[in-house]
Each structure stands twice: as structure tokens, then as C-alpha cells.
Image 1 (tube, rainbow, N blue to C red):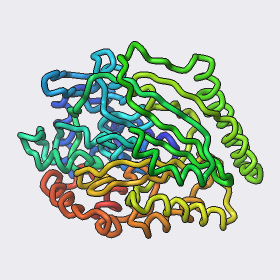
Image 2 (tube, rainbow, N blue to C red):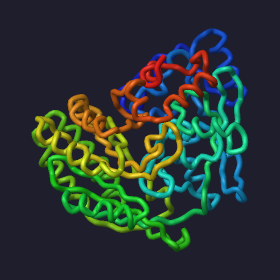
Image 3 (cartoon, rainbow, N blue to C red):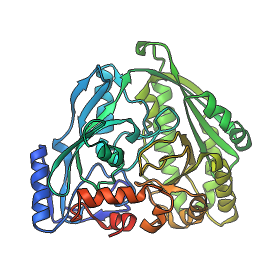
Image 4 (cartoon, helix red, strand yellow):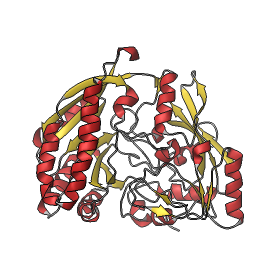
Length: 433
């Protein structure tokens, strides 16, 4: 069986595929791999653009380990099995009248994969999923089932919230939640200069801000999400026809056809971006949080994203634009700009500092290497930290320089997986052998 990720950038041929239906089955597979001096990886849905989850020998598929297993309304926490997709977790929480505090804009990932790679949203009091964890359970490289919370193995909880799959196989995750709430989304096109001039004010006055710049244009689209005091049943979502037109037809079906065609005739891309930016007009709507945070993504793409210090972020964005415009390169996808507060997770991209995220995309059929290669040096020079699940070229030596607690993570890895049962080529590159 061949494994490949969503973008098609990475693939692998594991020698063995197992679908465990219990924690005991996971423990058995880890013990088997350890005894044979081989490796084992639990895969998710493949939405990482890197090979962080690529299996080299035994591949575990968590399709039998899904669903919410407990709810603690006094502590306001919910525990779910690691193979649960974010989309299913969100829908389950909604039925319980509960919600995560914040999330990214894609919900296809398993919760274990999303947390382990540092998936994040924008704004809020907790930008990333890992910062919303109250507990976890994992199987270590020695076959031990280890539970971690504020009261039990707190050092493991602190570090393993973004664990890259290097510290153990997650089996359950416990999230802090809150009562279900409404978000009002206000989306509007803005000129480049106006958007950047207003960005700090917008992020200060709105709960969540997402900005998209269309390369080869002076146009951006800004989305501001703000919490409403109204109860969930007072939501005012977009009419079905408008949601289909904007989010399905224009942003996915039509855009996908145009982007694929532009790969063959790149000279049309600047004009296409002008038309795309103008086609997406202003709109306002409200809905329960996860339906506003998450957007459909049917066009397959490749992505690189770095977190840079928030204070320097807009100037880094300007420099990236200068570099792109000075080069003979055409880019059909918008650049996404988000920001998050600092957190205390050692390998979170926001660890210890407020961060601004710059995400660069290409269509799956386009060659991403030159474009990413142009902007990555700018991001690295600014002290940028790459998203663990997105394309980048950094190595363990590079990463040690931008993560003050990198050594702490390596020490915990040595303790939990001394024989490197969970290793693969990507982890050897970013963590060392």
C-alpha cells in the first residue's frame, strides 16, 4: 500500500499497514516495532505538506479510534480519540452546546495530526490548538501508556502538545472548551496600503483577522471575525445561493480551473489575480464559530508558512512582496496573513512571542520551488519559524537557533523514545538523528 499526502508532494511505501481499534492494539504495535528494531508511525489525513507523518515500516491508520469519549462540564473539557477529524469534533461539540476557543481554516485533519504539527488560527486568546489542550494520552517508544495533565506528568503535557509524532503515538486528547458561541464575519476588499496601515488597529479591535494579498496586484481581502452576545439560534448565515456562489463556485470550482490553466500560460496570472480579487466583494454574516472559522478547500495546493515576530511582521511581508515583484515569477494563489498571541508550548511557532504568519501557496500543478526559494531567506533572516506541517528547508541546527527550548524537547524525546521507534527522514532532518 502506498501512502501519500494530500498535496502529492510526499509519498511512502510502508511494509505493513494496521488499523488499531484500541489503545492496547497501539501498544502491541509499538512493542513489536521496538522488538524488531523497526519503526511505526500513526498517520492522519495527510494534510501536512511535509513528510512529518510518513511511515517507513509499519503504518497505523486511526480509523478505528474516533469520537468524543468524555465531557466534563465542571472543568469545561472534552476528551476525544486521536483519530477524530476536526470536522467531526466540531460537529460533536455543537450538539453538546460547546466549542473550541479558536481553530484554523481547514477541518479535515485528525486532531492528533493537527495538534502535533502546531495547527493554528488567527487572533483570540489562544491561537493554536495545542495551547487549548488540558491533557493527552500517548504510547511512548518503550510501549508505556502515559497520561499527561496539569496534575500528572505536567512536563510531558507542556512539551508534547506540539510533539511532531516524535515523542509517542497520541491516543486521546483533552481540549478546554467553552459554551457554543456565534461569530460575525465581515469580509471586504481593501487596497494594499490601506490594509497594511489599518492592520494593527484591526487586530486590536477585532477578535480574529485574516488578510489575503493577491500577488501582482495592490488588492487584498480582509476577513474580521467578532464574537456576538446573541444565542446560537440567532445566527444569520449567508443565503445558500450566496454561499455556493462565493465559496464553492468562485473560490473553488472556477478558481481551480483558472489556476490549473494558468500553469500552462503563466502570463495570464497577473490579470487573473486582478479579476479574482475584484470578484470577491464585501459580505457580512454570522454563524456558530466553527462554520465561520473553517472554509472549504477543494483546490489542491502546496504551501509554505513561517511565523515571524509580530512587531516585524508587516515589514517582512513588504520585503517578500519586493522580492517577488523583482523576480520573473508568477503566483496565482493569494498570500495569507494571520497573527496569534504568544503561547508557552516549546515547539509551537508562537512559543514565547506574539507572531505574524505569512503563508505562500501554489497550485499543485505548479513548480513551487523557485517561489518558495525566493521568500524563504527573507523569512529566515527575520527569525522565522516554519510551520511543522508545511514546506521548508530548515534543519535541526537551524531550528535550535530559533527555539530557545529546542534542547528541552530533544531531552524529552531521548526519555520517551530512546530507540527512535517513531523516527522517519523528516524527523531526522528537523530533530537530528
